[in-house]
Picture 1 (cartoon, rainbow, N blue to C red):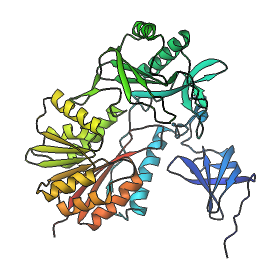
Picture 2: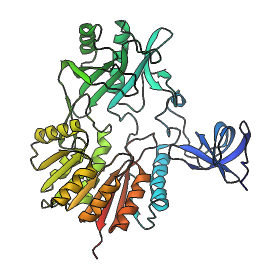
Picture 3: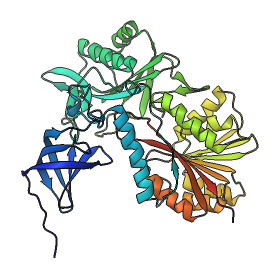
Picture 4: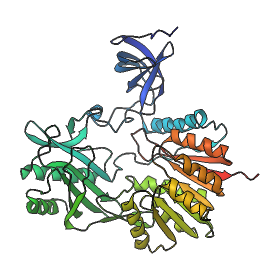
Length: 458
């Protein structure tokens, strides 16, 4: 006999929140039935309204907080509830770090069955605001006026805003100025429903160490109206700009960038540093949005690798070579693999830019290239993985197990898939020794982790 659901839609309930979900919603339980409520914090008593009921769980809306958590703070952004991206900014930064550290510990225990692993205290930021060095904001129209900002959660409605508390001030200023200039020049905003209009997105990138700014305008049309005046005004009003780029995307799609990119003025790239390594960043390059914490993360990866200059290292999922170039400073040779051809071109260019000659980069799937290398007799003393959110492919994990490197350094952006992969590696002859969470994205639910595994000698 199936268990009766203890609540109905539109019920008003008094609850106590016990936990937070992976996306920052408060979890309350009625007779064991979980209800997820955005804005609720563990330990708080609150009045909620049930908004949706499923078989195994429901959703609710926060009506009134009756007893407040000591970690609750006033949201700095008045309209924070209007757009996604800052899921945790109603929690003090100390509370956010505690939540993320606990989340890593819980999934390692629950999914990875790792009871005795050392999880170090999470490394946070001194200033957990205004850290993002890149923004790409959608452009639209409201009441006949050009607007740009953020999408409301689970919708395509744009909230017009000039100030994001996560973006660097230079990024906010660039977006605001380009929006104003486009409006002054009468450039038509894109209309998603009718697939008409011109300007779809405004993107800005900033090199924090170099002070160099790039502005990218993405249009539906191949032509950019008023381009000469647009460029002239951007140069005049944004003195740090080094690159002005036009990208056209005529497709009906949620993908931001199209295939055609043209430099309208200045350089094709801007530059920035992570530590002592210099990176060239084009309009389409992948580059870490928080270089300050990226350096913290990669320094820890380098520490865990314990390189002496004699080791051969494989960097799976190497991207533009960020970790590879860090490792190459202390390794004998680093081999990097990445599926995106443009990223590998960037990696080669960045190695050349820094005079690093002990790297080799290959295009392809890590789960295909690395097993092929292994069959050819190429092995590694240290293997580094930094996979996407879905984690490592099974074929790659099996190759790591077969290859038997002395150490594996696993950099993760998703604790759940990390824990799953660690369990597989543990069963394949590795021991998880240390885990270091790093807060790369304050005010959000995301957490990065770097893990050291060592091969168990039998």
